[in-house]
Length: 281
Length: 320
Image 1 (cartoon, one colour):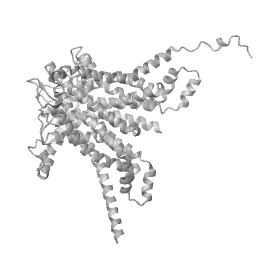
Image 2 (image 1 turned 120 degrees about the horizontal axis):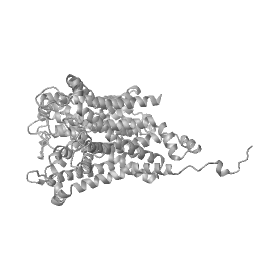
Image 3 (image 1 turned 45 degrees about the vertical axis):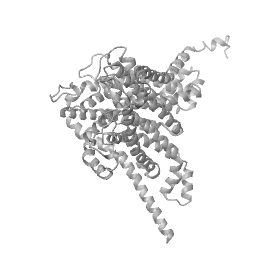
């Protein structure tokens, strides 16, 4: 009897704890379902062709769009990539192909630490080095802030995909008499290309939604910006400005902007999934 | 067989070493950029906060006056708000994440695991400003009407749950932070739990343990250190969360005991007031807050990196 009761109690605890962990998993994914529901519900209603092509309208006048902010975000992503991709990829190549263990360990370690530095801090750095000296907010400074965020991300993923390339590829290349750099550029990088693209897309998806570092670098702009030395609009900035505004029409536009932004981010990560699924087969 | 008159000529000119040198130098520059960035960020924030450091010294960290009109600055309300929201975030996120990690590695059917991991990665990809937008228009009204009054009725005898309910406030900020750090804490915890050797589990099963007992005795006690590391990493992310908190915390630089009251965090005061800082001293004070934030996150990230270094993989970093 005693043993039976004990056994039943243990069985019950087991069941209860299993149910609890299922509950945890459901709770963890529920915010995604909820936010997607609201984005579709509120965002779709406010989306139309004007939203993609028009400038923001003046207060109180319904209509208008975020055309400039969408283009601005794409420009900023491109600018960030101009800094982040070459530096990150070359640094990753160094870690994977050259270098001594001691130095490499330090670089890896500090890259991980830099990955954890709040994005707003990079905005402050970009403000100090690219806004103050030129006395104007600019697309360049926004791109710089986002580029800072991209470098350690791209560097780490690049190294990780390069070390997966079999050693024999390197040996074969060198045995053919290729100089080392040619071996890397012609054999190693093309072999790892899918992984490299994956890493870059992930990093771009990450910076696409960044708002804080742009607040005092790109600054936002209610008009088209014609030059990269001018303040530029960005989708996340516009969503922020509209969300905290007191106007209902702007709130609707903020939801629409959020829907567009999340679509952009998810498209990038869908691209990643597509690439890596083809890699496996 | 033809006779080679000059073996050296047959081999051709030795390949130029320039390509190698240039490429090596470029790669080295890329790698050293990490060091340059580290120095740059520390130097710029140190330099930018020069005025405030000279004026207020260490008192800056413990003074709770934030008065731009009078040019008196102290960072305590923001440090307080940052820690309160991060702590609430961890309190909610860590148990949920560990539970999910256990489900993912110990219980879930194989065909559920990968989709679930993908969903968690998607959760990590949602930009902060979108959580903020949702926070303002969905979460805040919901909490104000349905959750907080009930909470106050039950726990109202505690000082943390007294006072007027606005919906926006530190508790709401903490809940938003929890949602935002869930993915990273979950995926690192999952890596940690996955790294527990199967032998541990088999030994416990062999002794007749139930599934939960195996998890508790063999898995959790083995993975304790790593889970702690995951929580510390989550703390590092929580400290730096900016936009979503800024949008729901209420932005008030008074230190309030009640969690329902509005507060302010280090990152959000920078986000809100940086472009409004009209004087050099004001801007300098904000730079010093940035410096404190940077120092804290670097320390915490070093600590977390040391604790979980060995067990992170590409997948973990994908959501980081």
